[in-house]
Image (tube, rainbow, N blue to C red; front, side, top):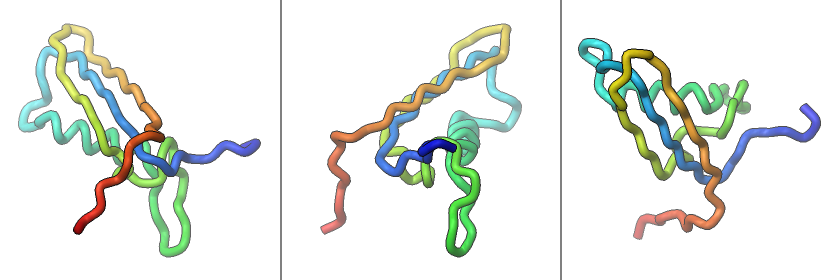
Length: 91
């Protein structure tokens, strides 16, 4: 992999779905969850297996998700790696 690895910091996702409508019974959150799960790694007891972009989808701290009307079904995803966001801590 020549030094390549997944990102361990916070992430912003921007996803645009182009379609006439959502599939019957589906909402935007269904698509968001599927994409976020696809980009992270599967976890074993002591390892992470095949992460694509980030270690875990809990690292997604900002997101913009939208549906744009189109007869041609497709989607676009933009991933932004955030370094300047300060995490919120519970008091």
